Image (tube, rainbow, N blue to C red):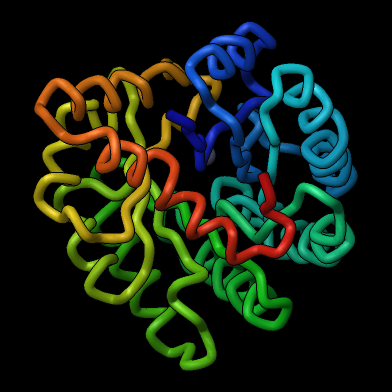
Length: 266
Ligand SMILES: [Zn+2]
């Protein structure tokens, strides 16, 4: 069985994680651009980060026979500064032209502020104009429901947006329904502490068996583990789901979403 990891921050992981993922049959992973653990002080720092995502990470992954793809964007946590954000947005197209860049993401909101929404909408506009996939980060815990609603409302005004090119990530039980009802893809993140557990993810898959759902481990700087994806695979198999059903969720669905980018080829 092959596995695609649709959202992981490999910049924060060691090479041992690439090795573990390879041994667990992960054949591709996608790295959205996000916060680096600290606020960057210049646009040049983002330029260097995007360079890392489009040069060093694909090479590191290749040694383990994993294809590394990335999304480029100005993330929500640092988009309060409109001038800095717009400077970063100005060179996003340059990076979207690179071989492993398959879309814009993970854009979204963090504290649901007006400036975050402005930068979110400007990047949605860029994605529409350039025909790019969009990977959307929904905020944590208390801000999640409100932020998800705000972003869904903003996208509703864009008649020129193709919903099948858009995925809302970190959905949970209280937000999955509204995302799917609007015609978007939804991805669930497994975290050992916050967000979803493997069992909760499988519960949701069972509730919406035909929905365009994905699962990711989001491995980053916090308590997280690329192996949680495989714990969910085991949980599905333990509950008696067929290999075909399991492969659909962990390979078929992300493959269908990502293949809408002409650069996503395995
Ligand atoms: Zn992320």
